[in-house]
Length: 235
Length: 312
Image 1 (cartoon, each protein chain N blue to C red):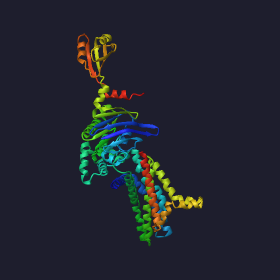
Image 2: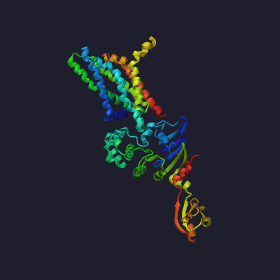
Image 3: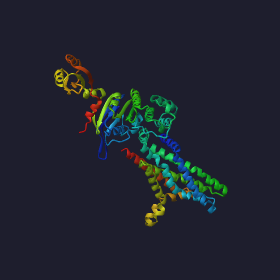
Image 4: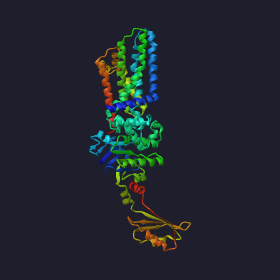
């Protein structure tokens, strides 16, 4: 566990040492800010609904961009060979990198806390959905980060990792809207896989264990798959 | 210290390493020698637990890489070819990171980093990003990182590849210094390097072991056949051959026809262990030939190597 923490610290400082991190943060804030402010005064409501409704789709692009370098770059430069022959477990490496991505996503979300502060001064803001929204955003981000890590472990090309991660996250966001042309019996269980529905439930301020469990399972499955892919590389 | 038994690794239909067995004793510097693509890197990767063997076993101390990978990694330090270190990190940060992962207590960390930095001569680059230092320094930073954990075994993959002659000498010097206290396994395709640094040499070719013996013995066994090169003026080939044949210890005399300047180049093949130089000199002194050159050529490791790994 201490090793995972060491890996996490290194990855965090690697993030903030590279310009990519700041570019991703700026793009995220621009896109999200535009969606938020373009409708804020239209609906004349003191809420963050518009901001949170967009989040799953935005995250489906942003999170894979954050995670793409994690393994792909190490394979590319060969530094992975050093990391893997140091006395630490595969789980420590995966967990450390996952934690670093989650910390980065929290840093990415932090500036948007200005929105509830602003809206709070303009009108009567219901604090429940805001807390739920940020909790959901962290869960969603962490689960997508796990998916992104899996994509990054598959390849030594960061672009391939990014596109693969996007495809999976995007599919998870749209599966409920695409399922309508399937028979009812197939569409209903498929809709339970939809990340955006689970996120919306939490963002309404309703923290249901089923939704939390969904993100926890998604994260666990993706991280296990990552470890499995890495393990196979050494067989 | 390390015992490799019937080690095989296949990638698809390619047998990169094909049933090799060898042993490395404690405190020995072992050179793994072979042409490019012989299976050196694959062997080292299996030694360090980076790759799992297809079949066969590696015992390191009391452990096997298959059953106790973490224990093996704790006592092994590995530097892959061309030292792929994180380019964006400062040298000091990289060493601190390695120290943490090696489980060095924070109180001891600074002292250990300073020791390793002094040993490898990198004190003047500690504050620089790894991307900005030269290849030679990078290799030394890699070595320092490996030494930090105070491992019993060091595994170095082509530690001098891509370096300039001065850097090569420096790295060899460090390896020899480290090798006094540690068991070192390193790979190279440069023979003079193995000759200069190793106690023992294992030559692999196409995934199989072509030779395994102490450096001195290898030269003795295959390089025992030394040769005497002579250059004579005022002689003719037939007369030289007749005069030098029959000396005990001389296996054959081959004289080339005289060149434009009337010089005859002579190659005298000597039997292993014999030294008939004095007698040869006496025989030549009895003639009116002028002796221009007279020197002993030992078969170098280069030639031994070429002989062992010749195609077909």
